[in-house]
Image (cartoon, rainbow, N blue to C red; front, side, top):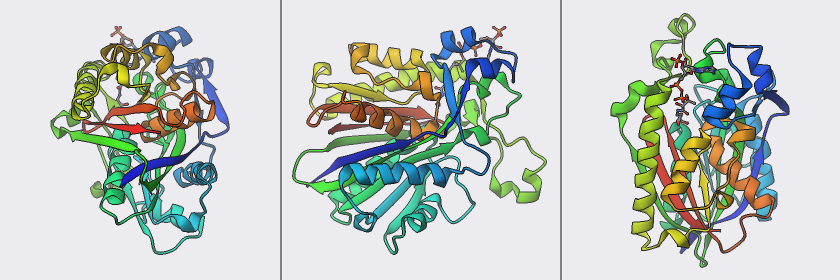
Length: 321
Ligand code: UT7
């Protein structure tokens, strides 16, 4: 029994903020952002548009692509760092939107690695026989937790959602997942306050993303190099057996380093960071959906998904589409 992706979907908020727009907000330049990150623009959720709204659009598109109805779903996992409420979970809010009742539904918090974690979890649910049809989503409104006065972070992030339908199948689908974390790196990338500080306290604190970008960069490149090796070894595959790399979209230079590690031509690497910025848990499913819909990634091809983010967390999923 395999867990196989049978449909993908994604959604980006209508409002686009270009690097030129950023120049009006903080002391930065289009040239700096392009050179250091590869980003040219990002999408920003409208006032009153929340994570579950983005997730719902992406979910409906994935359902349509898979030829499934909402009532076929028996597991919903939403990976998000920016849930709409303290509770209920975004997965429960989404379940209500989709008009389904009773199935397992929960959120996963692994920051930028969230979707890879969620897909690995769904794979285990399906292989254990407790799920037939899972909806797995990465959805974020990162623009709500960036400090718009901090040029070192606000230029990097964007909003969006990506979704997949994962079904039990006799055909090979997900071949392996590799999920890791090391909380001792917490100080390099975090939001320093959360809900256990108390709602009243939170109002007076700077609960924004803080990052020592340069240090994160170095650990990300090394760690993603290691996860590539681990994934190939676990599957007894050579680099040349991988048709597509769908990486987390934080920085074009990090993506190029991982592609180099795989000896992979950039033609076989899905890059969306230029248009989406870093959408955290949404970035991998957004990139996957982009390349499936434009016909680049075809059924039967071998695809490596990988991500790295706050925690630190990191991981990969190897799959046949
Ligand atoms: O998704 C989760 C994981 N996150 C990541 O993987 C992000 C990893 N890190 C990065 O992508 C890069 O480190 C950044 C894009 C965040 C920064 O690029 P960098 O090449 O590492 O730059 P830096 O932090 O070393 O800063 C270089 C200079 C500094 O000025 P000085 O000290 O050299 O005078 C910064 O103050 O660039 C300055 N700077 C900016 N200048 C213009 C920082 N942000 C900006 C900005 N515009 N937006």
